[in-house]
Image (cartoon, rainbow, N blue to C red; front, top):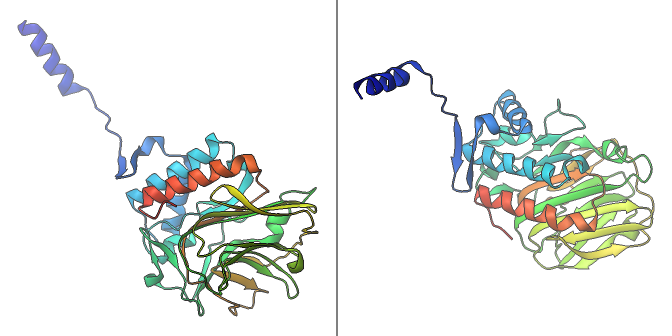
Length: 297
């Protein structure tokens, strides 16, 4: 018996016990050794842009990437940000940027008071917006046949107000996702403003997704459910302008058109996404927002 006790003591003394680093929040936990590689890359990118991150942002982003992969949606997305991290510098680093990972997103007139990880990003309706590193041309080129594309946005809170959501303006036509304007209408324009999808939608919140599939097929979804469509969207266009968020990008002029006052939880860009995957995508966004402590709508 004595021998057994001594042997056990020697075993405890001599071996090395590995205890993984854990990132923990009320929404879950993930170990450093089990992080999705994209989260580790995002963490390094945030640091390189003089930002920082929290355990909450790591858990939320790890869930987002793993869920997109498990549902077969990751390859459809070329840009995505959940507005996570600590400080405005952190949100210059999107979670996904397959098109131009070396270029930071560019806040225009936004300041530290406009961003809080537990709230999201809020515009002032006057001059604040964001230019993302991805251009409409880079989105356009993802699908060489149909040039299909998706604009997606999670709105945490918002009222009807005359402020664009996200998009580009080429001097004659808009590509945009415009959620609940001043008269209570949500729009998805794929390049010919006169052929946009227009749906009555008061004080819209939750995840919205506009999907341009072909010249004869465009659809608009709210919380995973189709609310509008067009069989005549026409051809979309290629534009070297970076996509604007909290407003449209007006020909790289940095002159605001109609900035938003809504609270944004994140946005994404990518290829056209089928109706069958919209509910899955909506659920992933909702779960991510819940981990961050934002409204789950």
